[in-house]
Amino acid sequence: MIFSKVVSHRALRKFGRRFDLLPVWASTALGLLAAAALTLLAATIPWHYGAILISAVLVGCFWLAYRAQPVADITAVEPESFSREVFTEIPDLALVRLPGGEFTMGSPEDEEGRFKNEGPQHQVMLSSFNMMETLVTRRLYMEIMGKDPSYFKGESDQRPVETVFWRDAIRFCNQLSRRLGLKPCYKLFGTRVWRRRGGDGFRLPTEAEWEYSCRAGTTTRYYFGDDAEALERYAWYEKNSSGQTHPVATREPNDWGLYDMHGNVWEWCWDRFGDYRKKPEVNPVGPWKGIRFRNPPRVVRGGGFNNEAGCLRSADRDGGEPSGRDGDLGFRCVRAPRRRH
Image (cartoon, rainbow, N blue to C red; front, side):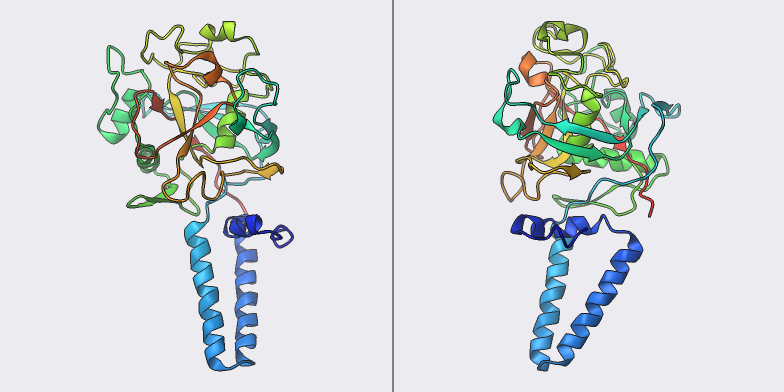
């Protein structure tokens, strides 16, 4: 499965990531076989050539481990129906269990308001996961992080938290995981962020997970249809927001019970912002390096309170600087079942 894919430079760059798809026993067996092959090869050539060969392989392994992006957790068990989980000990925290499935990601070329970066359309298959029913609220963020960075405070702590760095959202995910006795999904070191193997806590959604959740089985411009005139019932945007955020869950949800997938605030995703692939993908985590190599933008989705209707479409996407803090940029978390081998 893996070696048949490694036929081009593009595939080679994702080689380390694809290793994460293997069961532990298979990865261990491959490692032992590779070590044995290298030992035999090194024994048949001069020692200095053998040392160079083994050193090159070790450097390559470390490079792959350093650069690789983790795949979303995979489980063969899919829920038969939607379910909702409420955490009574933590305010404003409720999850909706979404079944895994396949969908067409991106927008067709004839969709009104379409941007070039929304294509090409391609098939994506996702495992089941749990998505937050609402955006992270000011009250929930304050409960977990002990502070409220929001620009819009006003009369309600049910407004979505905003003015949040991408790494602030990552830290929130880890802290919420610890609060509930779960293993955090991320490791942080300076400006670097890694996914932890075996983490079963909260994390940011991948871009594919976000669009899949937003569409809720639809293929239209919005999760309720194609008519932007009906958007006021489902979203806070430039036409009805009065230039500010609004309490979550005050517009109508999509068919999967998720609120504010259109409008109110943009939502951080895990992926680097870059081009789509044409080929079908399973649990994609975005491009290897994004539109630039160093500190690439991260995907933001959903549109905000000050955006026009076209920016709230299910397929609309943009990139936000990880160190950027805007008054229309928030997030919600997901939690995937721990991978079973």
